[in-house]
Image (cartoon, rainbow over all chains, first blue to last red; front, side, top):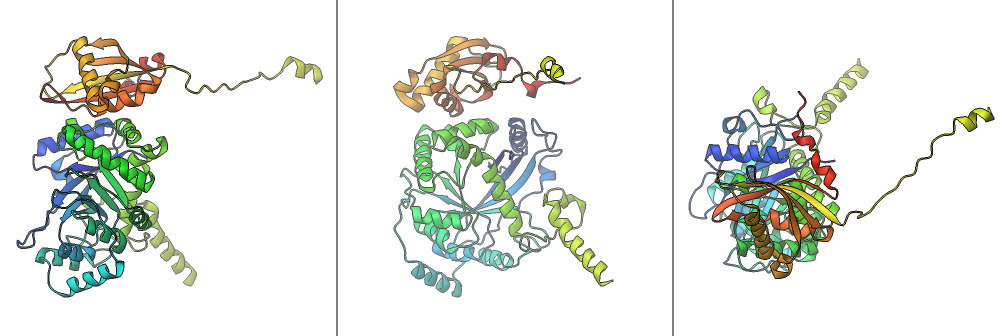
Amino acid sequence: MSVFMDLNLSYTTDKSRLQSLIETAAHLGFSTVALNYVFEPMAKKKQEIPSPTPINDLIDPLPVVQGRSRPIRVLNRLTVVMSDSSHFAACMTYDVDIICISVTEKLPFFFKRAPVSGVRSALTTIVNTDDRSPSLSSICQSGRHSGSSVSFKAGVSLCDQQVKLLHTSRMYYCVCVCVCVCVRVCVRVRACVCAFVHTCVCVQAVDRGLVFEVSYSAAIRDSTMRRYTIANAVSLVDTCKGKNMILSSAAEKPLELRGPYDITNLGLLFGLSDGDAKEAVSSTCRSVVLHAETRKTASGIIYTMRSCSESSCQQEAPPAADCEAPAAKRARGHLTE
Amino acid sequence: MRGADNKDKPALYQRVVLKNASPYHYMKVCLVLEDESTRLSAVELKQFIITGLKSLYGEVGAALTFDLLKYDEDTLTAFLRVSSRGLVKLWSSLTLLGSYQNQACAFRVLQVSPFLLALTGNSRELQLD
């Protein structure tokens, strides 16, 4: 059976609150959590992308998960809020793992079909002109490197997962159809309109390996958001037939976290079947994390990491992958000899 | 040989599978409040849960009958009994209850079982000394 994961915990600068959040998650039975850093690029201002603080600085030692003998595993996740097509074009070449869509009050989350070719040409024109913020262009350049020096810092990618947050429905469509590097799409309710999700887009998104995420802590905080969360989640389940969905909290406080079986029960409320609801908290999350890890490697077999021991403890790559390359090399050497 | 077979007949085993055998489901829940010194009486707790059911499922949901079998006021731990059909409703309303009298709260569901006997032991709290 796959372990339980909560892939959306809000990052706060308040260390004690973050510590209690992670301790509560470990106490409730989550084996892996991901701290969410939000980045909203402004077109005019130059902004620095938040770099994740190392886990050892935040909480040390990591609490042991209830029911298991291992400490909890804390990943990092970046959410990029995109509301403009220029951002989208820049981020399209960005090496992202997860895409998160959010509904705002400005534009309703109801979109029509856009011609795919039209979108592609629009993208190329935007990329050719320098219509993007400098910080994003630096991301793109670093993002094009595959393998070792990926994402923000050279040497080691400190963010295990990267998320894009899309405001407009058109961009959601663009992302699902055109972008080939997405892993996860998250639906976070902010506006008072129901999201209408098109089936064809969902199918294409699933083909690319996108996973849809629903956050439930808004439903705990506010009764109005509860209605919208449930409405959107139900429509999402209808559209993607319960597959490739994950449920996570966007918890800011420890009291907003709920246990894994409680979330499984919420999945039943949203219309998922028993098996799908449990998968939404366990095996689908695990597949997202594995997908994110293998995207940093060459065909999922070879990866590189910093040689010092501190960073290696956070990189939980499959040990078989590490042994495969040297073993193959050793065998070849033996044959030639 | 045959005599030995007659004497050492293997025991017959029969497997009985019960589906939805119990009409009730039992839950052990604990209320965690922001202010840990707050105390609730049994009546207040039941009223609080009914309010949660009403806010999520309306009047029809609030009409769901559940019983508070046992309540420990010091640890705010309660044993609830609900009919099996209403388990999902009660459980989800407990999950989505977020505030009690303007302070944040959370219901931690510790155990759920169709049999009350199963709630007597909890392997998570087992201490092997």
